[in-house]
Image 1: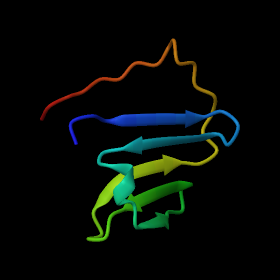
Image 2: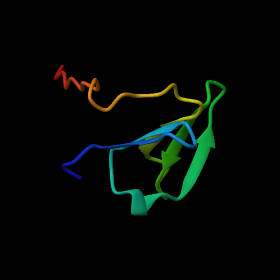
Image 3: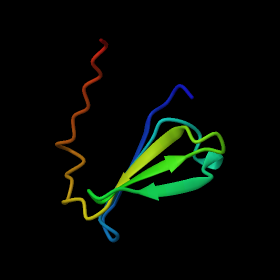
Image 4: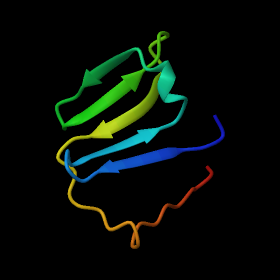
Length: 68
């Protein structure tokens, strides 16, 4: 996947970030920090979801990609 997909649901207050095709979702694992790990059939994390995410202003949203 060449595109990082970010979704914010104002009603559900969730922020979801996909690193791979959402159609590959097989299982979701909840962590203690209200973060869900979305995994494919091989157990690889292909996305994350943050529950109870504070409101996000799309106009103020900035994303930095840092290569290391």
